[in-house]
Image (cartoon, rainbow, N blue to C red):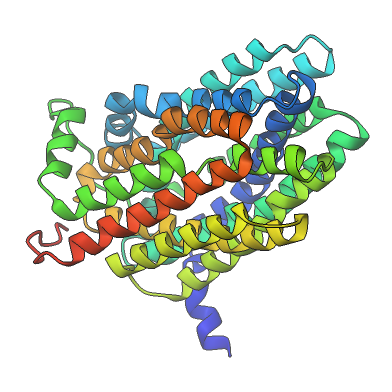
Length: 409
């Protein structure tokens, strides 16, 4: 009994990773609170149930993932990752507090939320590739798949708590307090970063100042059919599938006519699936293309079930399936791209992963929001289902070809 558990939790034997995970859990709870509060205030207080506006906010929040792509990956490869993370985390904390104060004071307007979403997204765009590659500095390549899975488990454990807490906070004391609490939660991750045992970090090779930067990373990925396949699948799922704020908020308000508590509960229920997938991934070895295929097929099926759900609890059950599939796919792409990439290139490759996976939301979220507003949320879920099945087709086509791209470690 203890052996499988020890295997699933083996990365936590590392002091730095334990500390990082604890601080990240607190901060991620706050992040999920803000996500729910942001969608709720746009949908119910600043507009009259306008899913298009939610899509615009989501798109603006992820637009910097594309706009800053030439610099975010290079920064991760060249600069001290711990110090850069402390800067980006502190910046996001200040922005969350500022939005909270603006909302509590009663001065918040829709355009304010648009601006804050974009600036917050800019800080997150610099943060994401650094945060993902920094995990390897803490635990090394040997335990990287396990650490990625446990990191995801921490993130989605927070998803089970954060949205439900946000629903209670919004209902009892107001939306602005959810933003404010998120800002304060960044103190936990900053403290954990400060207390890390720096000498125990396994600093990988840094890219030189004279290296080719973003274009070098782009050429590197283009020369790797395996990485290209993953990025195409990520684009399809990220652009048209991972628009959960739009889907869940529109279904909760327009179809099931629930309140803030019911809305927050849906995100928490979805996290049951994501948490389960993360724990299963932690006990597995290195993921393969077959793992991506399974994740995309199940994602398409889950979104189809969600689209046809006759009631609130049927929809909630379908979200468990969607969450499990989405997380299986996400963890596999993260581990596969890091483990098969040269250490000095990882920041740029992971920036491309984040940029393609989340940056596509800039295109997809407004489209999906428009479809939800004009044709109904169920049709927008149909688009998500189609993206999963198309991504699965890409994987099948790749698997039918000979393995012409050896792993580059």
